[in-house]
Image (tube, rainbow, N blue to C red; front, side, top):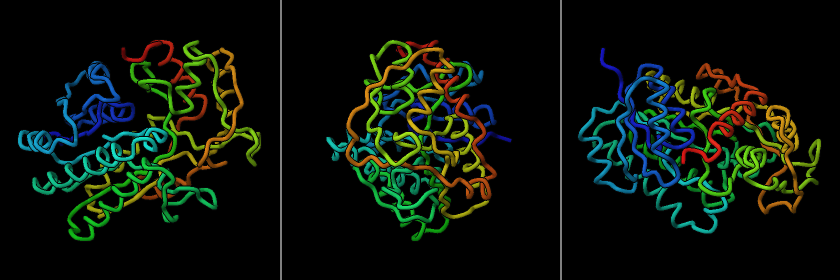
Length: 339
């Protein structure tokens, strides 16, 4: 029986590259489109080396309708996992049009071409940012959605687009995965997060401070109503996260219509707890600078992942120690990322 062909948009990125490896190891054929604006082709080569299998890679932008059409014309695609998108919250506030053009308009192009080619199975990479500032915790999938920045709104608009599309045509099978804070790296140390500039996220920032690339970690506020005064988030190992994508992909075979799941651990970890755990695993001292809170940041945010466990048979398995250990292995082996 011929292996199913999965198109992975943004497959050279941090989460996308880990997903490609997981797909190949589970017998799927993988086609990747990525414009490499915040990723590296070297990640694709490393995935091929780790898996011993080839990826069909096309350097293309989802904003290019003709480019995406060509990919569908030349391949028999069974399903799409859609990661491609700009993802820096701060940058989205400065460049909202760029974010809406790339994330929303680019996704619209993709969906139109999928519809034209009768490819109606998609797993969409959404985000916990669509919950805005939740009033109660843990966060469940049926909570009201809102967003506090253009990045979050772009994800929310795409979710609404997908829901409207399914209402109009129930033959679509759509999985919306809202994930919390992806961290960690592949256990080999060959794949990991490689920010273009100063990291936006906590874990790569900590690891670069530990490696001496950055002088200190800025901690934005230590006066929150939390157990140590710093912000609490739900961090999930990227390996667990991509396994959730495969479970979601498998679930689409049951023709569930449109389904939405949180992917998180359900455990809140503070900034200082993360720093302490990383110091232990790396045997490095992390220098801190406490500064003012950032506008829009909330004290606490963590998932209720029960629905994903019940409906997808998925549960996060890797703990904080593994997250730190794998990140430090990646950082140590690749001090300058893929470059």
